[in-house]
Amino acid sequence: MSEFTNPEFTSSELTHAPDGQGAQAEITHRYSRAMMQTFATPKRVFVRGEGIHLWDAEGNRHQDMLSGLAVTSLGQAHPAVLSAVTSQLSTLGHVSNLFATPSQVALAERLVSTVLAAEPGTARVFFTNSGTEANEAAFKVTRLTGRTKLVAMEGSFHGRTAAALAITHSPAYRIPFEPLPGEVVFVPYGDLDALRGAVDDQTAAVVMEPIQGENGVVVPPPGYLQAVRELTRQHGALLWIDEVQTGMGRTGQWLASAGVEADLVTVAKGLGNGFPIGALLARGGAATLLQPGHHGTTFGGNPVAAIAGLAVMAVIERDELLENARARGDQLASEIEGLPLVDHVRGAGLLRGVQFIGDIAVRVNDALLERGFITNAPRPSVLRVAPPLIITAEQVTAFTTALGEVLEAIAGDV
Image 1 (spheres, helix red, strand yellow):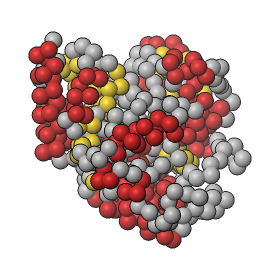
Image 2 (tube, one colour; image 1 turned 90 degrees about the vertical axis):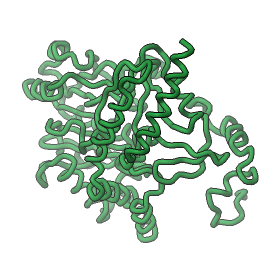
Image 3 (cartoon, helix red, strand yellow; image 1 turned 30 degrees about the vertical axis):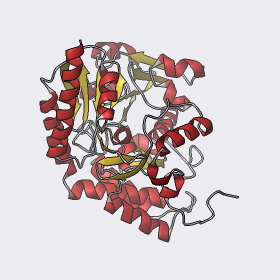
Image 4 (cartoon, one colour; image 1 turned 90 degrees about the horizontal axis):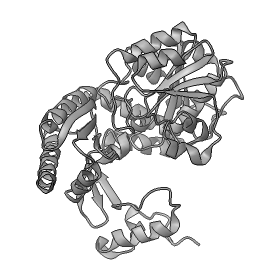
């Protein structure tokens, strides 16, 4: 029998310690006994969120400057998303992809018209539960071209399933699971000459991120994406752009690759604001390669996930959050530039990488967490900052002030 005798239990019943005292240590201990050790021991246990803030099991408030790895673009408990999901769940929760639902179709139409800026009928959507699954689907589309060679980028990250891992560059991720699907050739990111030497008439697709998030928010040279588009067309290859982290307004545009007509675009993370959803968007001939029986999903595009996506897109448009992402991102960069031990800030919108002088990112990240600010150190010398798109000017300054104090303290120790 379940330990929860009341079927209407709330999340507060999941912590056994009274008033949260000792709850964090207890839950962390239980985590270590119940969870597979695929992640490091969690540094905090979070129990509640509102807007841009999270509260841990001991009642401490944290300002979220990471958005759950670029997911919660509207922050926690956003009323529009909460209302949409609750309403949909009370009406229709799941019917399988043997049937259609209005929210599924409506979200597909919105993604085509708004995100791809494509005419109806010229692009199509396949829904998934995550970015990795969207990339897995895109990989299968490339196989249906009749070619098998893929050209991917050094420093890339596309996911952890077999095909997504095959186009992910890091040897540490790849080697334990080889052999992986081939044939994949890696070239330096942003090096057009190297790409020209790798792409030929046997290439099925070039796959790339418009900004490499997991590699430390690395931005390619100006004009690179358009040059890649032209090169792939010359050789009859598909251009596949992974916008899982950069898309859905994160960089101040619906897509960081806006203006470059990729054949395949994958999105996820910010689309559902925490509700699991991803999508493969395909235009032109690539949109018709997957046929009945080629691919499928049990939960992808279910009506609850779809209504969450529709709510997120509606709020981004209504509240002019693309504009806010650009303005607050520029503010963030300008307030960080010039701080002690900062070499430069790169990225776009509210996806920024702070490049330090020296490998101090983990130390900075941990010090910020102690002060109540959540960030991430994807590389030893890089701090990743990706707050919700709803962040205010005052909240940006609260963070940059804390960062400045941390860096001054570290600089004093050097």
